[in-house]
Length: 276
Image 1 (cartoon, rainbow, N blue to C red):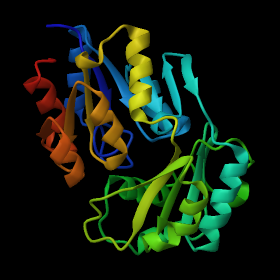
Image 2 (cartoon, rainbow, N blue to C red):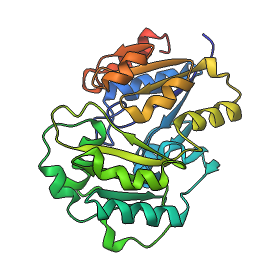
Image 3 (cartoon, rainbow, N blue to C red):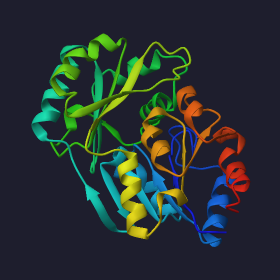
């Protein structure tokens, strides 16, 4: 079979949300796909410290991190684009003035507003990104209070609030330059959650960089995701797969919907697509 370049979202796709341990079926499928000559990369909204446990313990050929803000193959960076410092400061100011909980994600780590954990604890259900943050805060997975933020360049801002109206001032000031992605599939949670990213990059632009560097046509790429921050990935790859636990909107526009991450969906899809 012709070699394919495969991109995997993490939370809700490769692993249960907030976990760094993929199902053994997924680990075996990835290993066998690489033995068959395919290349496998991570394609996530996670920052570098949150990617590191997977990059260090499992074999991947490259990564797209920060929803496209940082891209690499092995130890070589292909792209590195932090937010403008003044834009970061303005966004955080406007979000806080409107009682929006937010966090900054950077190369060095992640820092969140006080009260975010308490806000999340009141939510029942939620999409994979909301579940990831809840688990990360509950289990002390390296997300520190904003009082400890050292001022390093931000690559992404994550937000959580009760209504979209609370985001209006920040959107008015910054939406010409940044996307305000709002996740769907909240499953009853009374929460609006999403992320702010620079318009000049996304998961799709990261995929193009890696495909070009490794000599793959986009028609020979496959992307696996579960939430609306995987939209540009699904639009860019030659064949898109959405997990059964994923966003209804993403499922509707994907080439194939496989079983959920907890039901060995990634391994089942790899077999269906002839990768293993």
